[in-house]
Image (cartoon, one colour):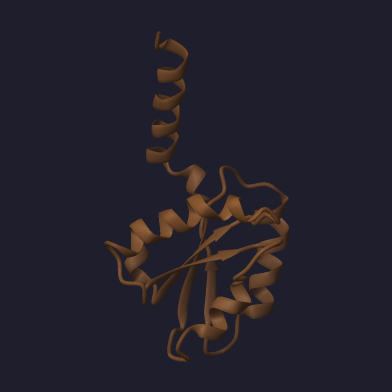
Length: 125
């Protein structure tokens, strides 16, 4: 599904207590919002740092009704199979629907880029 079908996209990263961990995600957000409006996409963290999904929802205009949560996770572990769906279920209202997308690691373009990077590291002299 194309992300333009949603009113807003929340890119969801895991989170860490180390503030340096957030830097690549914030840089990614800056690059994305350089192409896509800041009104269309934000970044949230699942735990250990802010903003949370709840924080982002409080900042969005009330008319932002159809929201996709796009996990910046490599694979679907317990968080994406259990924790996040439960959280989104609690956050869904009659006025707002949050849809959990497959993680970015499931995207064939991402898999191909990682494969290329790994092979490059293993075969370069």
